[in-house]
Amino acid sequence: MGTAFEAGGLTRYTRVAIALHWTIAVLIIVNLTIGLLHESLLPGTIPLHKSIGMLVLLLSVIRLVWRFTHRPPPLPATVRRWEKGLAHAVHWLFYALMILIPLSGWVFTSASPKRHPLEFFGLFPLPMFPVAQDKQLSHIVAERHEQLAYLMIALLVLHLGAALKHRFLDRDRTVDRMLPGAGPV
Ligand code: HEM
Image 1 (cartoon, rainbow, N blue to C red):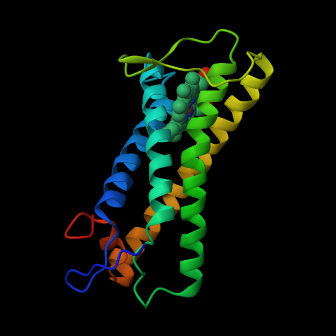
Image 2: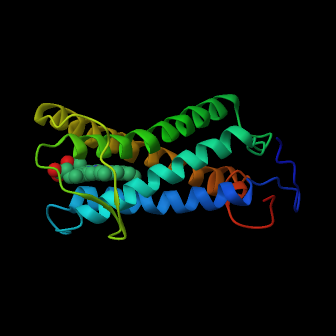
């Protein structure tokens, strides 16, 4: 399935891909902030953190299915081969983390011996991940949750740096492909 659609000489991502990209981006940044500050500046926000994380997991699965069925628009011809390769690697690592970080949160919360009921924004209960309650397992997976979150922050810096470089140094239209505007559904 292609995404051939041109408006003003630019082929964009589909509108669904753009909506998912920005929704997930905001949710992840909010969740990284809550995760890092819940012990100091944002007490009592872990139930919200868990709900947002479960939503990110759901949206990321949808996004991955969309990605596999819709080819991204081409990059400008001026983008160099190593840049394409690096962008590709970063994007797939992002997809992996968008699944693995919330999944690890779900697993270690479920494995905790003193686990709290899981709810979706206080609206309805969510199931525990099918895993035995085991203090050691919960502890190990919680550590992975934290380490993967730090890796995500490093990738975000790289991703944002690349976007700024394309926009302000190269002055090409790489970033415009992911900005809202006329594009295919
Ligand atoms: C977008 C998804 C998520 C991101 C980016 C994220 C990120 C983080 C970060 C950065 C921390 C702080 C780690 C530390 O410094 O100790 C954290 C803690 C935590 N996360 Fe997540 N998380 C996500 C999803 C989830 C989900 C789905 C759950 C559970 C259902 C969850 C449960 C927790 C809990 C309970 C803590 C507190 C650990 C503690 O301090 O004892 N997270 N998360």
